[in-house]
Image (cartoon, rainbow, N blue to C red; front, side, top):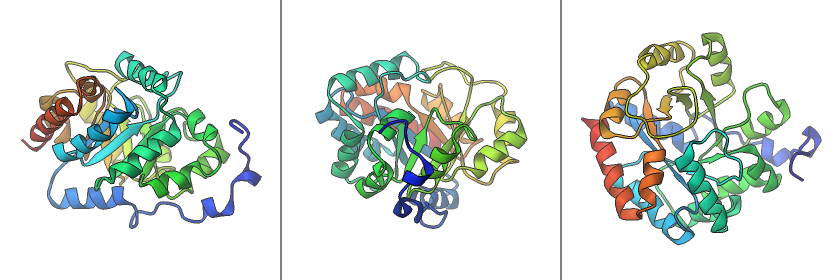
Length: 278
């Protein structure tokens, strides 16, 4: 039952195959990009938005447009870290009947060649059962990012997440001290998601002036790739941040485009890719 996961209930099979640097598709993707001196384009969309049928086409449009990694959001009724655009998409997806298992079905059906990271709050994962992470890996997911479980907050569940076949992506805030950055990174894998500014997700016209210094501090704390998200919405912003970090994450702008369908997503993804490569 949700909320009652305990150490004794974590199956041995789930703890036997953690994502390693050499085996995980996310690590291999960053290795390939590094050899080409390219930054990763990480694209977020919400599963089931604007509807279940078009979600599949949108995933394919992201890959076709040049996404290196896709974050697929699992809709949740109380998305406290998200701004109005993603909150609205999550509500619409829930109304469309999208669930954690529905998101896995989308991944399995899409058969993408780029890594997919499930982006979720903790509750939907727990509600999906103790084998939720292994089922995600079986469906084709390569990573998981849980927005509401900071390092040290829930050691048992963190161990469960970290020991799964999925890379466990951790979030770092711009105000985090360097020693805490290092601790967070040690408890994660795949890449570190650096939040570019405090607050919730959403489209912004500019990036924070302190971002270059924050990236340098994080680089001193970890050798994991660093991807920057929250507020990046234009090709120019993507190109600017991509010169500093290993990757950029675009979410709200793509979710807004998704409301207009796969063609709009394809167009925006291509323009972001061009901006990143400029």
